Length: 268
Image (cartoon, rainbow, N blue to C red; front, side):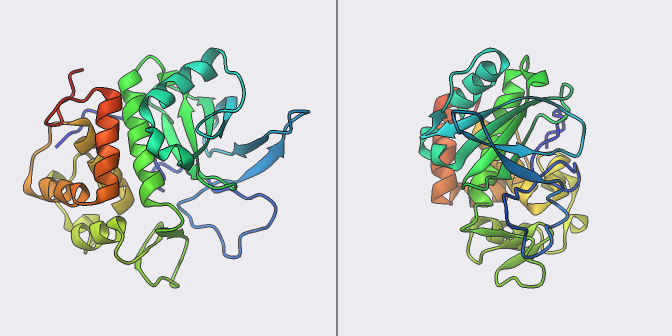
């Protein structure tokens, strides 16, 4: 069990920082509570680029936005935007670049916001990162890994946000996981009675105990990056993730990019 990390990340209502994207048409249903905030699309100047502005619950300084086209920044970058992109580019595998639509760069405080993902109105995901953590590169890298696992397991072809009672898969507070998907299997097996039915030793850290999707993301991060974990339940969770072809391939790609050694032990 790991408790060494303190950060705010992900889509959990417990941290209250996730957002939904609203372009022109309102949502048919009310946005779920776990996706607090609003966002819109703002057209740029003569370059006519599209930037999706995300509103965060906490007060943050907006540094800038990196629009991604074919896996690369559309515009030339400098300063803190270039520094953040260097970490994203080194971490986010090419095989999943089509899921990255934009990187929004903000500043709050070290180990405050750190990172969060939001669905993009144009498809894919918006990744927000805090430049206050630039001096802690491993923290940003593991946050990107965590958020990337959300992008894979909460994509709109496998998950529907805010489904309410209209769920033909596995319902959870965040929405509806399609039947047979890795998140649906994970929640059914390891969250049958909610977190209150589990023991602290069943999670890789306290944040993992906040919701099934965060448990999956933190467990994936621990497995992919070789955190020292122990316990029968955690090992069973990792075995389930390792048996999923997409997550197994993603973990392999991440280990290569981040220099995680054989056997899942990071040399750093």
